[in-house]
Image (cartoon, rainbow, N blue to C red; front, side, top):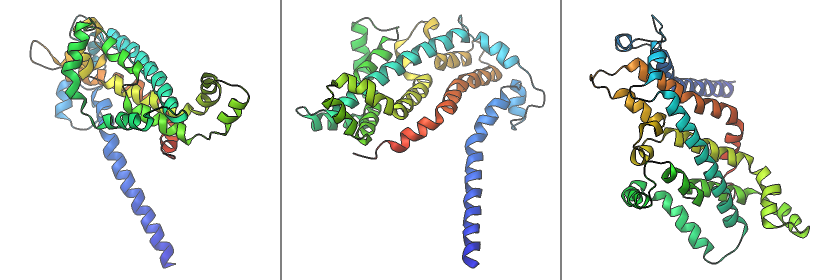
Length: 283
């Protein structure tokens, strides 16, 4: 009986710790949503997330933005950019991961080691040479420097994730397909990719969120306001000539910016968890 009570006590203590941590993590989101329905004065006067006098002024006025473009333009730019970036990343990561995991070629291990080593390389070091290179080819003030490199598997983390997931797949079906005369590309399309769904969803979800939140890349390469994504649009909404920031507008647009990634994560949660838990079983 004493042992049973100890187990119950440990279980209750674990639940209490998890609930406290959960509240600490999720409270800023509730505060953001609640404060988006407040006036600027009430945001600072009342620290709670429940508005006493709810208003939609933040959404009405915030949508107009502070510059010449509205947030409709910013959102459109963001998700065109995101879809193209995600597509390029998935295609390149799958192809390169397939090559490293299923084929033998000279210097394979050395090349994979160098590829993985770039995960430790600070990307800020290459910003200046990258900008000079893309400037000389006339790609500045366009999304080309942000999207086209992803076609060449420059997103090393996703390549590594795909390599690990490919290694976790049994080779029996590959060998059976080879006996039936199935080529390498057909094996990838008809046999392996259907089994890669959790890993592909994981890559898509991560890249969707990271690209949608990217501020530094668009800030460096884009100069025309009508090409700005939401991340820079939020910064513009805080840059006012009067020096007074309309916080209810900024918070309201921040809520709208968070909703699409949140919805995508909820819809893809099962495959995402499966992809994370399966990756790295073999290596």
